[in-house]
Length: 154
Image (cartoon, rainbow, N blue to C red; front, side, top):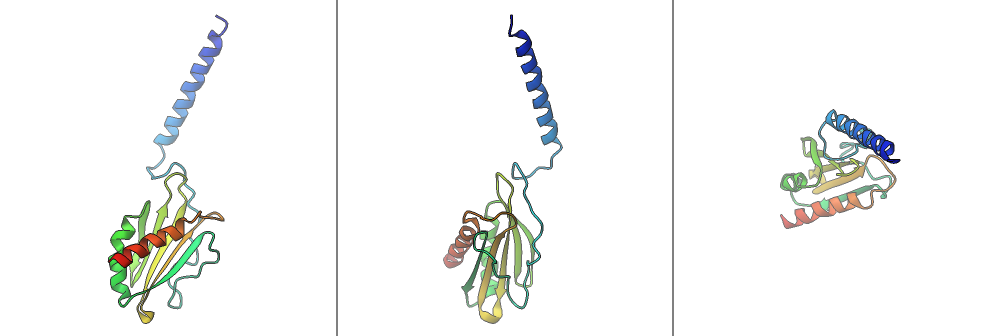
């Protein structure tokens, strides 16, 4: 059989590849995505001078201000909706501020979601920004649209 050595070589190669993949994935921590493109923690997170940071580019960031009589109550009412978002993890809450990360399923891109109850201006400020890349393909704007719909419904 002229193909027997080739078949045996392919079989050993497949077995070796399978073993390597098994070892690689066995030692990896459990996470929601196949890859992990987290990026550095942005320096502009948080409330500064009574406001969340402005977006430097709408290609990978979305920022909204929602008028509400009681921003603190609105923030509390939105928390269940935030927790239902895909890939969400709460990082920080307190003093009318919420910071969460949203990790995409396939590539593990991390976006930062911030909400701030601005009682002085009767506004709930919202910001969602990607840590990496030049475009988010509208993901951050859609995330804020979802939260705005939930806020309107409550």
